[in-house]
Amino acid sequence: MKNWFYYTIIIVVLSACSAMHNVPSSQVPNNFINPNITSAYVDQNGNFYPNQWENKFGQAPKKATRKEYSLMKIATENGFQQDLISFENTQLKAFANRVKNKKRVIIFIHGINNDYMSSLKNYNKARNFMDLNKTTDEVVNFYWDGLVTNNIFGAAKVWVSATTNSQLAGEYGLRRILNSISNKEIYLISHSRGAAVVLSALRNPELKYVEKRIAENFHHIDVENAAPLAENSNKIYSIMIAPAIGVKDFKTEEGNFKEFSKQLKMIHSTINETDFILGKGKTGILASSFTSTDFGFDPKTHQEIATQYNLCETTDFTGQKSHDFKDYIVNPKFKEILKKFKLSK
Image (cartoon, rainbow, N blue to C red; front, side, top):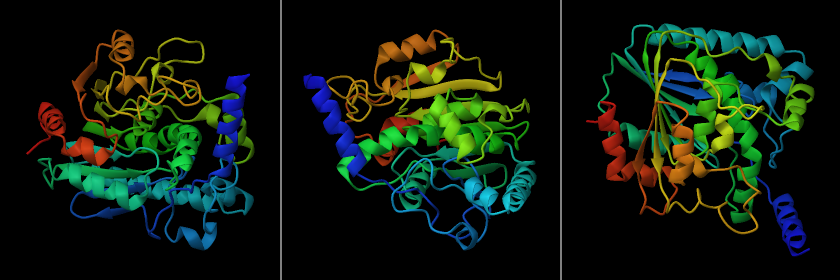
């Protein structure tokens, strides 16, 4: 009876608190910045924002929900779906042409509760530690709708609501970027729930039935027939900083561990037993209320997953209490990770 009371309070609090969509501040959010930076910005379903997007799609509602606002929903229901598809195809072809002679592609993926500017600052900070060749390396700043709030209770709602967004951003957004690249070394540097974006790009996520119906009926997204990751002879290295994922993210609906493309060469993740955010669900009444984040928090969980794949390595950040991307970046151990992949100065 006591637990029911607590759960009721949680539901009331989460319902009363709002989060906003993470939408672009620019009207040309998907662009190329010479000499070697690509900006890629997708909505909650992984569709790329077109130029002058606000003219056709309007402003996102102040209170974000899964059903109300998306590029494909508005385009389909207002008769310009093909315009959106055409823009995306043109942009992806231009990106493919831009990177065809590059050797390495480094892709940054932020976590939940990050807007454009905070993510950009973190990407720039991380890039400053890297030894990048302006001719042979391309950097992709990837932005997705992990929602945004300044309210402490709203942050709890973001954890719940942004789970599906991270999966679709990977399956439909990041994957199409990866499919535009061939014969390259690809480094996916993610923070927090950005790790779910990465996994969903590599292999279809297991969406809840209700989320599938919302995607299909409200947003006109065919989640059952997404194009798979193309076998383009890439070498993919995933660097997961404070990964907010768990065993479930690695499993199929049947409970089996997923098989990933042979292009995936390594998953190097941080372990931090003092990261309060990653440890949020370990004790108390919230234990079953949030998506598991044990992969970046609990060595036993990491080992359970690592035994299934011969490509998992870790760097221990235990002692650092902050979950913020910027604090992981300035930790000297981040530079050690970059050195391992020959990315550091």
